Image 1 (spheres, one colour):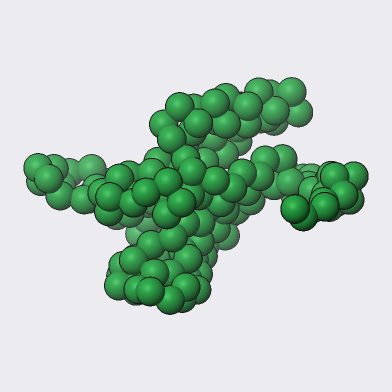
Image 2 (image 1 turned 135 degrees about the vertical axis):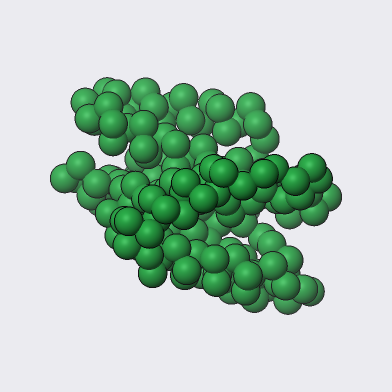
Length: 180
């Protein structure tokens, strides 16, 4: 078994201002519990209520997208794992990053969607948000990378960024990063 020096790990997390780090299978109840812990931490740090809600909202949106994707693909526990990180820049800004295993064929359209949003200015993002709100909901259609992603892009201080790394076997590891 790997011998991890927890003091070193704690110092690493502290030096990078990491408030929350999770890696493992993600369930609805776990999303709620981690979200509550994040919300409590932000409250304890006297984070501006608007900023705290934005961070909490981005965390929930990212983790729910991961969970919905895993369910839609029929993934088992190991494939439905998520890696989530929330860090502070010490000046009121927050990094929210989440990653998961996806089908390699799904990576390119998702990366294109995020690049498209990243290239938009605030006026274009507002227009895209309103257009998405007006679109009719198609029964049985995937709702991923829609309104919630546009909302995260609107609230971000920097353009969204995403990466994917091939894993073999038709899979890739996808990661989305937002700075609020």
